[in-house]
Figure (cartoon, rainbow, N blue to C red):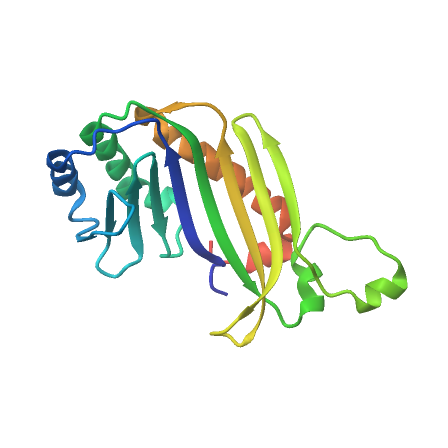
Length: 213
């Protein structure tokens, strides 16, 4: 079975940055081997991506967004992302960030919509006549943690490539309070560990045991 992780995204909000052309060129020299494809996009300071388009970085005036669709989570992205984030802080004089958000988009193929319960630890109590007709609908949950909170969205979808139904599981880990750019690696690991914990709480052990370890 393939891992269900489709996309990882990181958003960092900050109050101000020194986005001069000279600093942008310096930043590109630091990370250009990781994200060599640079292009101008309206209303964005800069946009970079890898040659195979599996990774991208977008800079706005008060927002940095990193994305990866390579199917791997933060621990395996850490080396490249830490280098990018460290270069960002140094290049644009950003000592701290606010509203750190790390998100994972997962997609689990379903035999049919009624089979979604086979993958979940969460049960839905309902009258028997309704249960016989019930398939699935969008559900939202929030888990509280010391660092902030994790938002969870469960919803059915149709996968055009597989031509079958799937279960989308979105996890968004949110940091409360400011974080220094030098401490981002530690904080992102904590956000990842929180989502890993929620992943194991929501999905059944039978399903998790089938995933590549």
